[in-house]
Image (cartoon, rainbow, N blue to C red):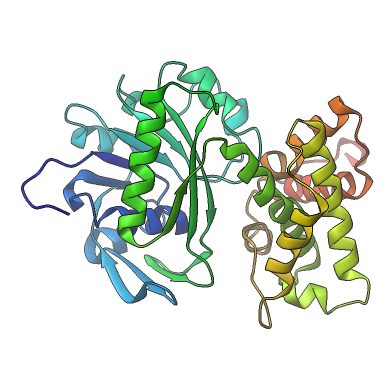
Length: 335
């Protein structure tokens, strides 16, 4: 970062694992006072000690000290002339049904909205809410876990893929996406700009929509699951093939069986005991999972396109049911 030069003003909405990683990566290009991070459960630690990342790639005991706040309302005190980027790093659970997103008060005419969430079809609610703002969609291969409040462990991968939504966005929107990619790369990520990021979203979804529900339901990490039964790996590929068929029916012909095999190799080659996907972590903690963003939207597209998804649909209904149990839903039949 060049001292004395103005830097972009960035708001991170949701400073869990992904938000913390972004705060660290962007701190190499942006002043700490210009990175405003909304923290909740880890607020006290982050406010006092900053965010600490222990990474097998970037190094250990990496501390970043953004401007830590509790809420959008408090963030507005640091808005100044407006945020250049708002990074949405919360889970995509209920956002699709919201008419007005919580970030709305912080959005200025020049704000770029950056979606750092899993799933497919997550951009449209934001496009509906903010039709004139650039929307950047990000696909992350940066597995992080919060091991203690404000302390994060990062391992295996550091790939960050960036692109506009929709792919045919104006040139000015493309430029702001490329600038973000460059800042993330300066911070140490293997960041790339893609003309059509939806291709990469479908590729990531091959992993997310198969591995996440399987691990959440079995309570096994991915490597543990693959070694649990002789046909476990074949079953995972069958689920992935249903996702790939849906992607092709939606117009993404590049999501071939070869791509499936490549993504399957990513998760089957991890050392014991393997990775704990976010949905498994949420299930164990009894938290809401991203069932619709990761699974439900795929099934809806498949239904519209006439693609059969028996395995994926089974996983969705089981995960959705588990989510309902976490909400404490009452079964009126037995009342």
